[in-house]
Length: 329
Ligand code: ATP
Ligand code: LTN
Image (cartoon, rainbow, N blue to C red; front, side, top):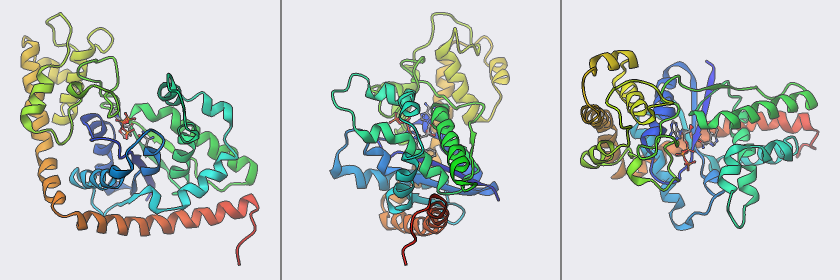
């Protein structure tokens, strides 16, 4: 079976964008692929963070992924720092990636802009991500649209490595969903919904109780017109709500436009709120059960780390040999 690999940072609470853009696809991939998913705690260290809460945030993110439908028997779910091959490959790829290509990454430009001090880790973030992908012989990487440029870099680095050292690394393909790949902030529908943006009202969280979800969705910013029509350029807010509804209901957007013809924006928002609450209910229920049973999460992560290490260690052996490092006896 072809392998998929993806990762998510344990930074803050997961939101609807993470679920619709990425995790939803991961759940489906478990049945059709050799599916490997990673909580990327080392990536979370590239921005200021609280050491006292990183471990807990990592376990909570893993629990939420299990609650969203990942099954440790059908996929590999692990924590990035538990598999040292990721950091080892990062160093080797650092010697293949160029300063110029990393400087062009838009996420780096966005996140470093206006900062007094920027860590080397933030600059090197995409190389660690390339190592994550490449040390698992990954064929496909299901991610949201914001990760397109990082994936292109991972492909470039893999191709350059193979050119320089001989065919060693699998060159991965991106898998970006046709719809839901870029869920927008409800309060600012021209910006991507994001954990780290300072927009709690515009960001429905997977664990928000129903009344909070309703409030956030009902106060979504729309335009001054009346027509419910999918037109991201001129009607960003309404189009975002239609995309969310389309994914959670599994109904194509033209069908939604037809069924909502003549309805007002208030009706659209109530319909979206009800659909999102219904969609999240089973996830929230499963999360509540896992929250009371951290040992179950730790057990799943231990199993995942063992499976992930055996694949990654094999790739690293190939990489060490191709790059000419002396074998330890
Ligand atoms: P941050 O804002 O801290 O960078 P994030 O909210 O973008 O975090 P990540 O952990 O970086 O979340 O992303 C996890 C996955 O969710 C990635 O595959 C990413 O592409 C996807 N994703 C994040 N935000 C959205 C969004 N608004 N719409 C669709 N997919 C998204
Ligand atoms: N940068 C990604 C998280 C990530 C990732 C990966 C995604 C780290 N390593 C490997 C796919 C494959 C993000 O979502 N912000």
